[in-house]
Length: 364
Length: 253
Image (cartoon, rainbow over all chains, first blue to last red; front, side, top):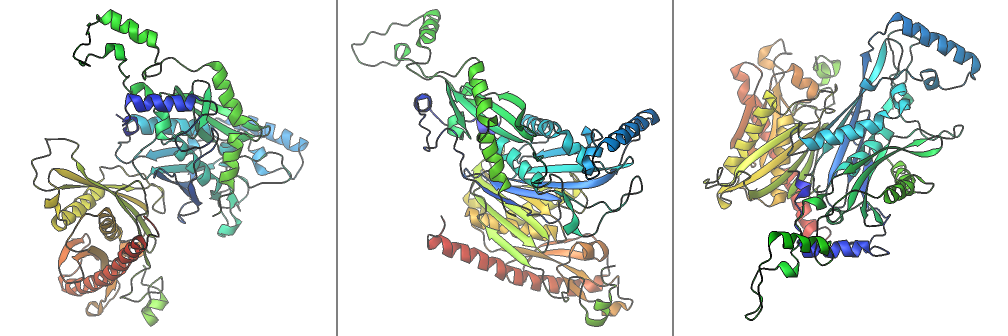
């Protein structure tokens, strides 16, 4: 069982938390507002032997380091038919475009998914455990949704860059590690640089020895372009009744009605939602409290103890509907709540933009 | 060959400008991770290692592993894919990694006061972020610091460093000099050993050598290594004392 699901809270505490979070405005255990994130420590470019690296520490002690390395690899040759087709398309487009268009527009559509490889290491877990596999699938899916990244790895028809992203979770997973790993990967990719290409066309790739001449994988803000490509970010959002909370702590996750992982990326028209995945909230693994009517411990000498049949006991619990005692949440998320979550992340000046802005401001 | 440079022939300066008995820059910090019981970060030149310690805790296997009168020490080493020049993903069952784990575990089993924690397990997690020579030595030093940070009592520091010989380079074998603290390039070409001592004296607790060379050179290399360990011990002791002072001054908790 994944460590983050062992919840040391009693039904009374869970009920108390749930009630506080259901208020308007919600009362969070640490007093944050619904869209306020906990402070974190972030640094980039910490590993000089990598193309890009980052380290983020969350205040609950969890820490992650991501290192990005790029290696030149030979491309698998496609059939002659398709390559000539691509050349024709390219020539036609070149006639139409301005000459100072960047190279990557000419490489449009040439990138391949297999050129990006992501690996996650979590201490105490083997590589084939469910959590590392699930997390790496979610992060890879979000990364590969951006064709621009794959195109940036194209060198010429015979060679391409292969990007290796190694994610290390340094502490035991005390809380669900997805937002931490996603933000650290985002930061590492922002600082990733590839050596500048000196050779022309299809000759063997030759690069400029000067590291200062290297280009960023995700180019820094370019005033001539309206939108700037950015790596994706995955945020964890939870819902308690009608209330939406961002950056939930482990306690808050223990009483969540629904937990959702939202992946967003930057596109020409602002933030775009790439993926939305529901995550089984750890609250479903908690045990419910026992209503007073079902209390079988002797209360007082004169109290009448009538043993209820199992059917009657069940009926009593169902009617209670978790009002008097804690009951693990059932059912899914309402569509309205989901759409409010998406809107809160994607809108102008929304949470997604704020997080991306915050990460972009991290100095080396 | 790392010693074929003119600077070595003329002034006996190695590739990075060091002399035969100079250590690389050693940077160490303790208590780097709040979530772990004990943690440390150590850099020996470009070799960077993070160590976290969890424990002493109840053995996962419950009564099965129990019946021990002493704490059991488990070591896990994770060598990051980006640690070398080329990206290489190493599995946990790698032979070299297994040997390093066993060496570290047995060195500390003998040194820690494990009889104070019967039926428990102390888990040491090492993460190698960057490799440039002296990997086992860096791991041992980082583990010492992390165990001290976790508050597990031991008789003295276990400090380690590498020592090599210029034997394969010098044509006149009698003139072969010992070298202290080899970097990655030197380790690939020259014979070397890793020596770990218990404290500043001459008690050797770890000695590993994987390359071959003439027996006559062993004594000089060992002497150089033990001397290097003494220097490292004083540096690490300084780090621990500085951290302790900061804690006492309530600068950090």
